[in-house]
Length: 402
Image (cartoon, rainbow, N blue to C red; front, side, top):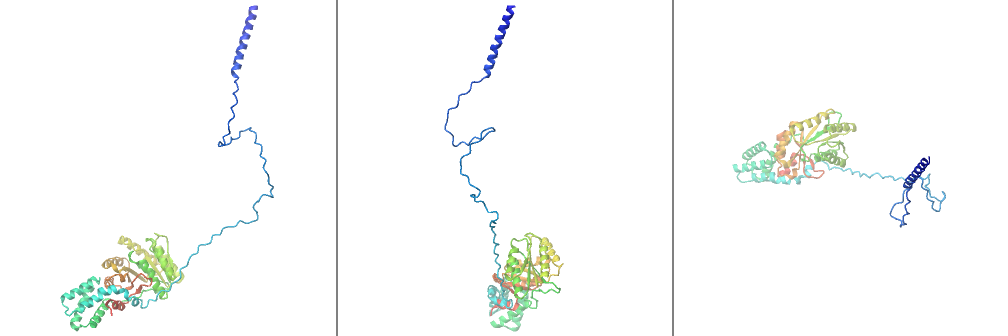
């Protein structure tokens, strides 16, 4: 019995020792406090955590609501008002009268005069007009772009008259040459720009030609010619494929008080032409001038485009005039262009530009013979009023001099 009691006591003691070891292992020795260090002024303040005590508020002077300068709720804040941009309206110009304008610009034809008129007079004044001289006369006419057939006709008539009449003095030769040049220029042609519609609508004038001939500029100058003659003009900027063509035409129109109807760049030319005629009718205008595109990439494309413009415009009223603009300095190349346009639309008149810049004044004769229609206007410079109605007598007088 004593042995059993002793065993129980030993077991209790062993268990007690083991329990003390386990409890002791779970208790950790506290770490010593960290030594004090200088505060890091560059480090951001530690963020507060849940349960942290709030910082004691600092003692700062406090202001009452009366001392705070609050905005007045009743005061209206000033609103900056933008001044509208000042648009300068160009002054309306008074174009130079067209009557006698070609006579006033006669000096501009001096280059053509030297090559054609004076050259012919010099040859005709020779003591002996043999075959060689007549060949030189023929060459002079051909060089001046008169054309082969008109040159042959003119030389034959001159030879016959000189032979029959025996004309020899300078005055007689000048008179003879003047008569023959006038005859070949067909003075009986009606050279007035037709702007009078038989209907109760404005006269409709379509301007065609290759880009680079001065087509848009000529349309603007033609507006000045018509305004100078007392007409009220509306411009249609149907050349939508050339950059700034509409701006250029509008600038010309503003100078004489003519309104320009235009559309987006690359838009439908026929639509713009239609709107221009429509607005011309609504405004009671006298004339509507339509500037068309001058592309010659393919004859088919040109034909379709101009044909469409013509058809659409004629839903309002028939065209009264179709003017072809040609550059006089291109000579015979201009005749090739003329043939293409004549196949596309019915040309009723020709405008020759840059006639002052060429020694080939004979292009007037050649283009009339080629198309069978009259030269109605000629450009003799870059001035705004340098577009003149063509007058055969004044032209011939300028060519051969006094």
